[in-house]
Length: 83
Image 1 (cartoon, helix red, strand yellow):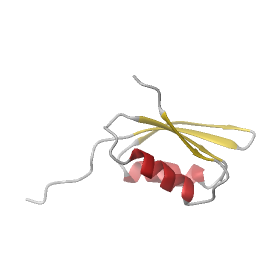
Image 2: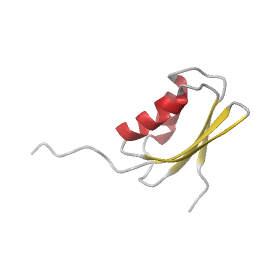
Image 3: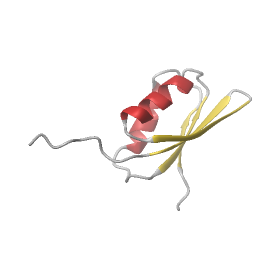
């Protein structure tokens, strides 16, 4: 497995960390891993919500001296055929 893509959103306030993560995940194949670095405490709410909306999953979250480190994995598409 390759190293995760690191998305640095330190110093940004909601919703920018989630938007940066979403932009980085655009076009990624299912199972791709990303690490989001954020300092906004709201990211603890926003990132899990984003991953549930994008059919991804939270691998883990760590906090050290105010720095949040989210590890996430992209999921498959939620698009359902309309036929």
